[in-house]
Image (cartoon, rainbow, N blue to C red; front, side, top):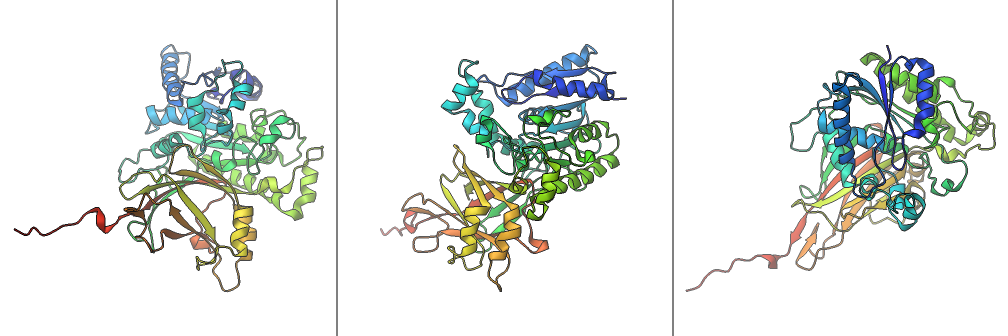
Length: 483
């Protein structure tokens, strides 16, 4: 028997947008149980995601006490609703076992931010989005939604990673806990003023890599060894074989991913990989083995979408999109996000740092053809955070793997390397080394070799970099006392 279903909207939206989705569920066997449409305030400047999660817990407990809400139910979320759900689950059900939600279906969730959050906080955003709300746009919520926000970093430490130095490996997601599913489009907005915010590798609002709940994390410690930094891979809370299903669809943008039976693009792709089939597969999943099988099937769906990036598949792209909105092949490149936080060896945030990429072990050759190509074509966006010490790098992994390495000269290893430097604190304290020495660190980021690849397609990577503060000899001295 189908579970009860609750649906949560995203920033600047409300439950009315989800009546078509609720009607679709009713027509597909969910008419025997209530479908709940959740509403929360997202446009008041003082409301935080944590506030919404707290009220959500109070409402859920009250509805269950009154026997209106079942002991277990399924939850469908869209966009910012993903962060609300994760915050609620990690705060009140960190072990997942007692959580009333079994299946968590995330439609284009902004798990790791949206580039549009910064625009929403701007004066223009307040005029276009806030005029109905006293020119408020939900400042606190948008701050949490910004790329590389502290909120996302800390939430990931609560529900996805085991924090460094901690033995708390409780997980909200697992065979006996919550089962997450992620569906996201990779087609930008096809028409109207929203086309101004389109970005390859996204649905116009949320990047595929930012939606995917499968993450990686690493600490790079130059303070331990400047020439060969110590690398510590972060432990995941979930089991190794419990990766989360991700489906990347070629015909959906941020608005149409919640409309299973409506698609203005007239897409004619495989029905088994279509949005209606995937939604029902997720909600009907009833066994851990089925969950893992769906993960593999959805990966195949995502790879089918990625195959449209190849120039030789242009005819297939035209066949699948017979209407006027045939997309460009570059829409379907696969990307990675890297969220970098830099601290010194005392744990202090580093105000200003610079990362430069190159393709040869000789770091002096940074103006080579492949290095210039990387910064022009592969590194597509660097989002500086208002908070110091953090950056979000958006990298075209397709161009990296299929084009960048071909430009590295014969005889050189097919690698992507980087240097990091920082603005020096002052004449008495420097980063990395004393005056006159090389004030930077170098590391291997990715390699074409199978066993040295680290950047996973369609994923967000958290990188904590520790750099040494080096005080000069004048900072402290001892002088022998002479009587």
